[in-house]
Image (cartoon, rainbow over the protein chains, first blue to last red):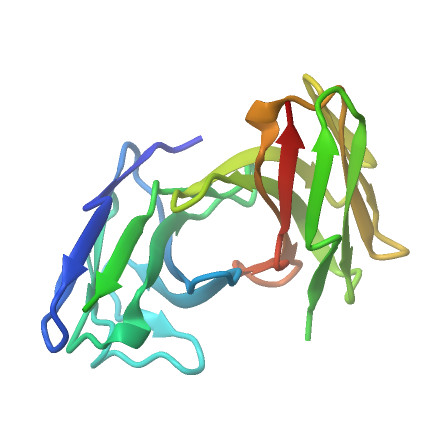
Length: 113
Length: 112
């Protein structure tokens, strides 16, 4: 299974600012996924990121708020823009694992004050 | 629309007890089902993956079963230990999709 390095592991940010989260995979993968986990909740898919094309966003998530980059087959970033306290969550990246199961990064715990 | 439910939401047991966590899903057209463990504030660790053609998978003290026709999976933990305390999530992969659909999790506390 792929190994994912995600950073930062946690951050405390001021409202109105932006934070970029990075995920680096140790092998080339076609699809990467970004999830949000709000306090006390389960995971919700934000978007699917394919290399060389725009990310596909799920209902309720928009590119202006969560821009995603996928410059190559081993790396992706998610930016949380113009943050408010409601954006306080754990953000996780994941890679496609239909054969061996999905693998997740260690998560970014974001607190917006 | 696929929905995944986990029961119970929380469980507290004494050390050494055997326990069962339940996961149910509404649409039997799944590609596979995966059980994860999540420690507070952390990412997800994959525990077991069951392909749709399989009935069960085992890893150490963990055993997961899958009954596609009834839309159910169970995670059996034998001889529980305090280090097993975590949230356990099940997730199904819809047959024609790359999207994992997660249950809400079972928060487990194993008391010494």
